Picture 1 (cartoon, rainbow, N blue to C red):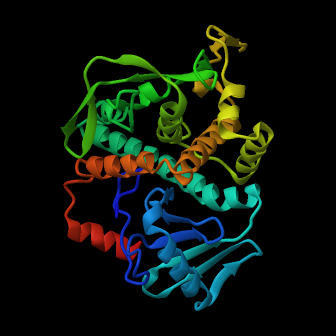
Picture 2 (cartoon, rainbow, N blue to C red; picture 1 turned 45 degrees about the vertical axis):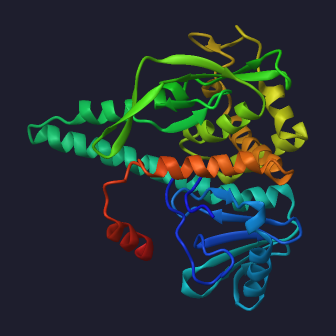
Length: 337
């Protein structure tokens, strides 16, 4: 049983309520489709649980849900606050738009707020220290530019480390691959520790990913590219794009541009294959589609992919950015959040 978020590598916490699944303090479940997720308290992402750990836990969640007064409920989605701080989200038969609003709406909103606040705090610290005679702005900007924000694997299983610079160079283009598209990923080959952060190390390189490897990579990189999340309106528009494409992989193919294609601009034309130049609604749709496709593979029996992602998350968690903070402090933050 895995205890670490696949996406942000933080501990998912635990509960003493669901005996067959004591991981997480916010669980979402769909009894009809046999799905159970642990919602990360830190990044709000939904972690699909391994198949063999799912069925008894779902039945227990269902019982607990109906034994507890619901704090919010619609015909399709309900939220119940169980004892000891555990929250249960019950998924019925929602339309894609309603489910997306529940799953991604709060995550995107929190992402926007946290990034704005973090940037403001860092600038304030830099200006304050500059006034005091110790200018830390260059150090702050240097850390922000070179810290590792995404880790993915290539076709051979090698690990790729991406900084904000590499994330913004991500390209999606038409290719002779099986699905008709591929990703161009710039990366660094290694990382090192610097105070509380993991910093990229080595000469910048480039590789191309296709198929399931590209989908998994996109699922990790796009949240960093969409660092300011999106509004409810943008979530609805992104869902519309996914519905029109009818399948996640077809959305990637429809958005992919030919190599060398340009997007007209007022001053300089922009590279049409660079995802940062796409409309924000399209980027959010690609992020959501990448997650849906990864879960589809897991639900169809490709559990090795899911298990590998969890194991990698736990490995990365051992060198996480907040590794040096005592466990007692982490526990205090979790209880008082």
